[in-house]
Amino acid sequence: MRGRQREAYLMYKRIPSRDFAKIVDMEENSALLQSSTSPDTSSPSWRLSFPHVVVATITSFLFGYHMGVVNEPLESICVDLGFSGNALAEGLVVSTCLGGAFVGSLLSGWIADGVGRRRAFQLCALPMIIGASMSASTENLAGMLLGRLFVGTGMGLGPPVAALYVTEVSPAFVRGTYGSFIQIATCLGLIVALFIGIPVKEIAGWWRICFWMSTIPAAILLVAVMFCAESPHWLYKKGRTEEAETAFEKLLGGSHVKYAMAELSKSDRDGDSDIVKMSELLYGRHFRGSVIAMILMDKLGRRVLLLWSFFGMAISMALQVTAASAYVSGSGALYLSVGGMLLFVFTFALGAGPVPGLLLTEIFPSRIRAKAMAVCMSVHWVINFFVGLLFLQLLEQLGRQLLYSIFTTFCLVAVMFVKRNVVETKGKSLQEIEIALLPQD
Figure 1 (tube, rainbow, N blue to C red):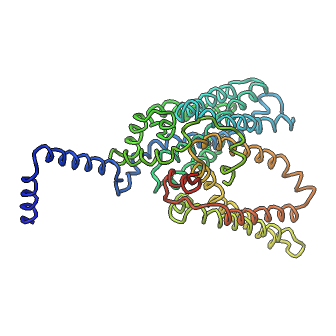
Figure 2 (tube, rainbow, N blue to C red; figure 1 turned 90 degrees about the horizontal axis):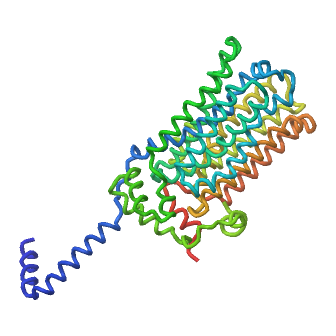
Figure 3 (cartoon, rainbow, N blue to C red; figure 1 turned 135 degrees about the horizontal axis):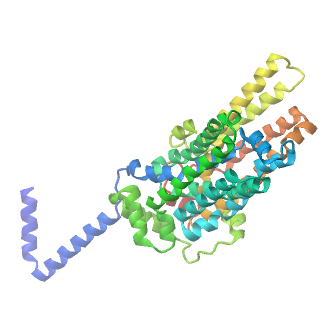
């Protein structure tokens, strides 16, 4: 070791002082460049991004709450507001929020891209507070429907933005876990709504309390989001590089900032134009596209969960077909039917429920991610509306066996589609996924 030091010393001694200064500068610059571009091999702490993710999932909690808030109190609402026995009015109270949700989800991408993810959360919370207050204080059907429409707008706006935000602020190694929080929060909201609705038959006017209660988490969201980091991806896309670095420091820690920014710059190939045409979402290269799930999503991967989820759903529908056949009757048909439904709920919660919301935000490039999610969620709401509207009529006209056979076929088609087209995104950064799916032309 001393011999190498002496050789280096003699070599530097033979070099003129001016050249020696140049060498020292080159070495310092090289070390600086290496330290700024080489990634920190350790994973960033999940604790830094966790509070930001929790705040974002309040939107999903509110979504679940408002989906279930009228289930128990509906009868009392009908009596107090004077439309008891009017089936159309009762249906409108339940489904009006779906119309608002369609509008909110359709606009969510443009809002998220225009004003940022944090402001979009606030614009989600405001109509929920206003709409819930209107529904809680109304004395007629019109006020109730208008309030539900306002709430629905927030319901449609919130979850797509939450999926975007959670995907963009999460470290790659826990992104699947954090993505599952959205599904868990939705289920928790449904459970809380049903629990709060229990006293509605014993306490007059309790249904108003059920609506007032929803303003509390909405107000928390409105305030808490101001202390959250803005999405670094959105900031970088808007040219606010220094703010993006600050956001990454909050979310990942200072030692990971330079690498994260370098990863962002790699995927910045379409930055010359921020205008996204609807045709880009439908044609060309952009077209292909619960607790157990939380544990498995970052271990087994998204694709595996989707495959087994749709396959399990197909089996559950096949059990329903068998239960409806003439060869099974009595208690056997009952056990098959109940078992099939339980299997369907379990396998849906395992993959088909939580995975698509995360996977969609991962596979779309940052340039079109928000607007593409808006289109996808709008399609979801339209299909959801028609399934709810037509299911009973189809069941009556086609019968259980044929209808569930159709559902089985769709699940098997989904299995084949996932196996053939869906890519695995587990453990990859958003930039790596984008580069893999959209190679440089």
